[in-house]
Length: 167
Image (cartoon, rainbow, N blue to C red):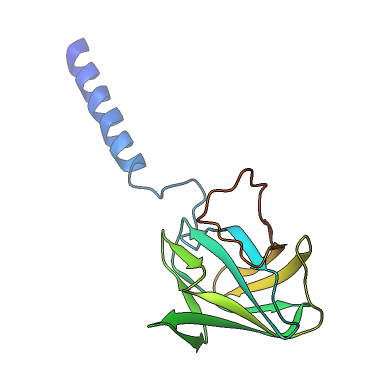
């Protein structure tokens, strides 16, 4: 085989190797499961000592999952809700779409804290244990904001609103 012929074969082999390499997953070690991050969490200071609501965003860079339950020492019961046509509906779980987001926000999906063990006030931090069908349990520390807090409104300066730990 000539020198040019060997170079052509080598170039073809390298190109085939690059194509095969490109067929792998998006990231090294990708197991195909959900890849969740939490952010934007807040709990408006409730006007009464009976109920509170909580909000945050789950961003998923992997496969679909479901938020199946939430617990907190703030309340005896934490339930998942969605709002449809202005009415709250309790849910068994909330879907976390593949490569998408689950948003819990005023007027939409949210948490309800029932039978509060204490009335949280602005400046407090509430700890939540979030359970996902596939990703397992994640801990989220949620700041208590003023009752009228609206993250869509511009704020003069906003420190990071939540910290999350994955178990």
